[in-house]
Image 1 (tube, rainbow, N blue to C red):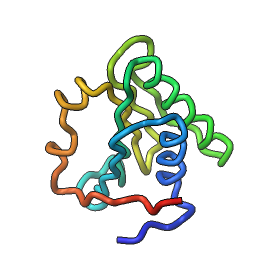
Image 2: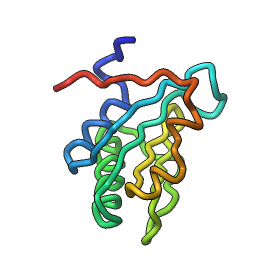
Image 3: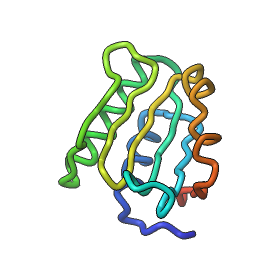
Image 4: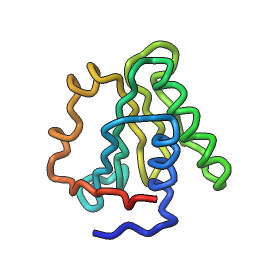
Length: 117
């Protein structure tokens, strides 16, 4: 599946990349869940970088006219969730990502490889 270049979740991916997020995956959950269409999942080296990634995602999407419905997990947690409605950005520490393993929980979703810039 080839994503649209202007897709908002792709802006989130680019923002995460700009803050050196690793192992970025996009899960297409269209038709699988009623609460969102895509998960953007990525890993940060530590909680400080995790917060920087989440902040940059929110900042870049705000420039595009989109604000998150909610942001959960700031202030020292190991998982930050930014809910933009059509897609949700999950920023994890490596340990939390392995523990929660969203890719396994939502394995029926297609993994989309974002196009390179």
